[in-house]
Image (cartoon, rainbow, N blue to C red):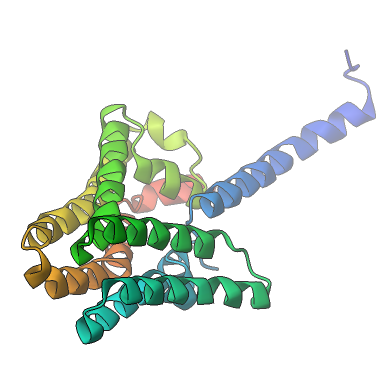
Length: 245
């Protein structure tokens, strides 16, 4: 046990709050980055960077766009799938050249690979978009479960970006706000399925509309949904003042 008269004990006590604050800040930053969220210099969520920046958005859009254009022009499924895979592979090479993390590019090429394999196996071009339906459904299930358990995903993500840690769970008003924010993101994902699944069941005649809505309702709609959720979960002025005291 350290003696109360030990000068080191007093020094540690003085440094404690500062160290704790630094630790919380580091935890907030690390958690946000791992979750794919980024803060701007003024402490707000950087929605564009969260979506991967312009390069990340291009990585998510171009393979599907290349597939659509190639299939529309050639009507050759195999050729179109190879073109989409090549587009995804190009981004991986670009990141290698830039010496940037490959996580997003590799995830993209794996996703395109699974989609291409399924479409090639069934021989149906529209099946290129089926894996995305299951991904959306899985995210919806996880977020709805988080709301039911009173650990809404928006709170876990935005709470750390705002340096609230998990303190927001002690405030019923903040829990309600983060539940609402999570429902906004769920609505974005659900809207994708509501619009796109019927187009899928139209078969090849609905392919162009399915591909177009997939592009529009991908990164652009995601960015909008995250931004709306961020605004709706904004703490009251009094809460923000207390948090900075």
